[in-house]
Amino acid sequence: MTITITAFERSPDGGRGLARDTRVRWALEEVGRPYDVRLVSFAAMKQPEHLARNPFGQIPTYEEGGLALFETGAIVLHIAERYAGLFPGDADARARAIAWMFAAVNTIEPPILDLMTAKLLEGDKPWTGERLPLVMDRIRDRLKQLAARLGDGEWLDGAFSAGDLMMASVLLRLRASGILDEFPNLAAYVARGEARPAYKRAFAAQLAVNTR
Ligand code: GTB
Image (cartoon, rainbow, N blue to C red; front, side):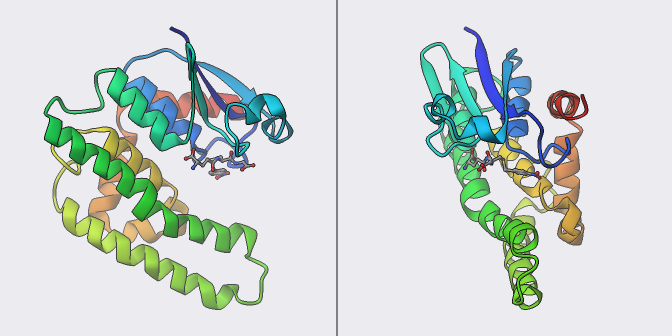
């Protein structure tokens, strides 16, 4: 069955791989599934045709036969469940991988999104100078905990899984802030993710769109 995802016609990041279609591309590359991409403009994302795919008018979305999905976490979970390569065979290990996926989007990503909001959307507000250090410290608190759990492990729970794919994708967004470098084991963990051939193919594919 053909898989079609949506992505920005032109990502505001110019192809740095920070838009969330990169996570879905990475998952599809890990499981070896080809996919088509429907590129959408910001205007098209708010039109009924795209709102039927994602009620919030966002990318990425995922279509496969009669199935239409939105929310990156749900999409990556679906890919990992349907195709081999992203979940361990053992049921308990699989449950733990799912826990790491939720931790990525529900525990680690929110303060990171706060930082993006504080810098990009509210950077000109009078309170920004006071708010930024607070937001950055909240990220540090979480990264301290995550770094302690990862220790000198290669991945979060045994072999690479969809949990690592989501966690590394979330952490990648911190690179420009410099905070990631304060946690050398997390920086190395993200670098291991980026070194995976599947990630490299996903990154190259989104870059090609944004440098046309
Ligand atoms: N919870 C949803 C999910 O996980 O799928 C969130 C989806 C989402 O935020 N999509 C963003 C979007 O469509 C693109 S990824 N935004 C357009 C809109 O809401 O109108 C977020 C993103 C955008 C840009 C950059 N960047 O330029 O660096 C990074 C990340």
